[in-house]
Length: 219
Image (cartoon, rainbow, N blue to C red; front, top):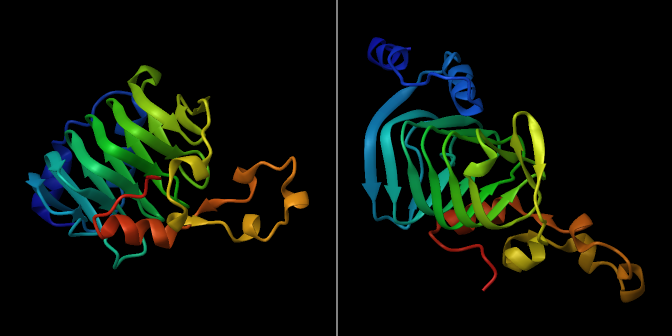
């Protein structure tokens, strides 16, 4: 790890007992070659971190989608020392996100892909939150959750916080869903079945759609 980045890590404002701070400290203990950038604004349709393991000193103010994953690395992490504002946000498979401020999305937050984690110290504000299947969102305070519709649950104090669930097929476009198993059932076989036991997010399609700057929400 380079000396400037080590010095940055040592002076990071990651104090307290919250889950987000604890996750940040755990990630920063990894000797993986962290890089750092200043907080920034972007008007691009989509934004990705420039490095697999990246610290943002300040807030990210993004007009488009935030794709937490480089598309070139199998794993990584982004730590934002401030707020993160965007249109949509997705944490890619085996990537990790920590936001020490608020996470604000004008459409959707996808914290549901396999082996991913998302921790937010402040509030989470979004019309749609996908969390509680293959991955989930962890927040420091239950009162910080300000979302209109959710797919399952979030984690608070290491425990699931159940939320009124909404069907994936009602929340997102069919083009980002794997419906093969459900569509293979005939009408009699579907009777009495919960569609959400058969329909799941298609990770590749979600990432492709959001990386292109598009929406995943059902129109």
